Amino acid sequence: MSAQKNPNADVAELSYEQARDELIKVVAELEQGAVTLEASLALWERGEALATQCENWLTGARKRLDDAIEAKKAK
Image 1 (cartoon, rainbow, N blue to C red):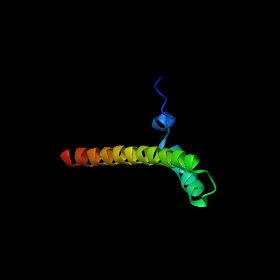
Image 2: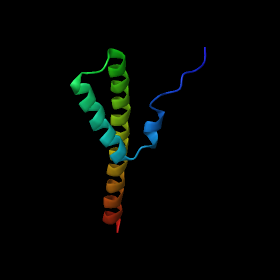
Image 3: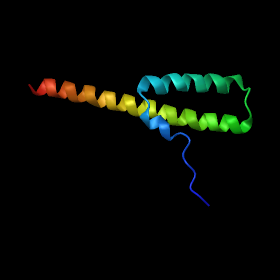
Image 4: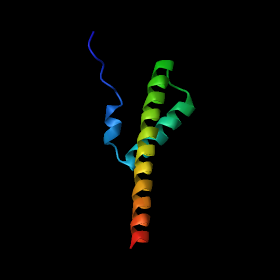
């Protein structure tokens, strides 16, 4: 049995804005409820990956701001 490729691996390469915009589309599609169960599960997994990517970007941005504030205080 061959290893399956992660269909959401590309999410790690997205900018915050790209991930956020795609996440909005995924949520809208899920809310419409017009897709099959299997497609819904795939969308849900994609949405989770996108949300994690957005969170990672925001955490990184918060750390950079905190570091800049601390550097300013140290002067």
